Image (cartoon, rainbow, N blue to C red):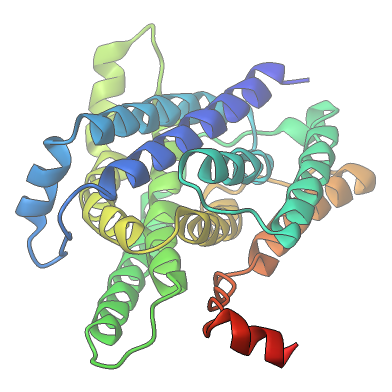
Length: 310
C-alpha cells in the first residue's frame, strides 16, 4: 500500500487549502487587481506579507504534489486531491467568515466517502502502475489548445464583468478558465516528477531542459498567478477553488491518462472503486451551490405599524 503517496497527497491538501485561504485574506486588503496590469498585480502581491505566507504554503504543496505523482497513478492522485475541499470549506468558514450551507456539509461527507473509495482502489500491484513520461508531441497537442481555451474563456468573462448593469459574477467562468491552466500545470508537474533522480542531478537537469515540462510550468505559473489572484479577489474562495479543482481534476484524469498512458486497475472491483470514487468527488463539486443565498432585508416601519400588521 503506497502510504507515502497518500500521506503526501493529504499534506498537499492541507498546504494548498491553507495557502488559498491566506491569499484570499490578504487580497481583501489590497487595491483592486486588474489583468491589464500584470506587473502592478505582481508588485502589489509581493508587498503583502500575508500573501507571501500563503504563496509559500502553495509552494510547499507543489513539492508534496511531486512526491504524490511519483508514487500514485493520476486518477488516484486526483481523487485524493479533491478531498482538500473539506478543509477548504472549514477554513473559509473559520478564517474568512464564509458560511457553510447544509448542502456543502453534505458534500463534505460525500467527499470523505469518495476518498475512502479511492484509497481502497490502491490495494494490489496492478492498481498502482505509475507512468513516468509522456510523448512530447501528444502532451503539446493537449496542452496548447487547452491553454488557449482557458485564456479566451477568462478574457470573455472579463468582458462580461465590465458591462454596465451586469449581475454580480458567481466566479464559475473564472474558475473554469483557471482550472484549465492548472490542469496543464498538473500534467507538467507529473512529467517533472517522472524525470527526477536524486543520484544524477546533472543528467536530470539536462532531461528537464530538453522536455516541454519546465516551459509549460513557466507559462502556467506566470499566467495562473495573475489570473487566479484577480479572480480570487473578486469572488468567494469557496466558489472559485471548488470549480477550479473540479476542472483541474477532470482534465488531469482524462487528458493525463491519454498523454501518459497509465492503465486503470485490471481487477474489476478496484477499477470500479477508482472510477466511482473520482466520479463521486467530481459530482459533489459540480453540485455545490455557486451563489450565496440572498440576504433578507430588515423589516422597516414603526413599532406601532408592525403591531398593526400582526
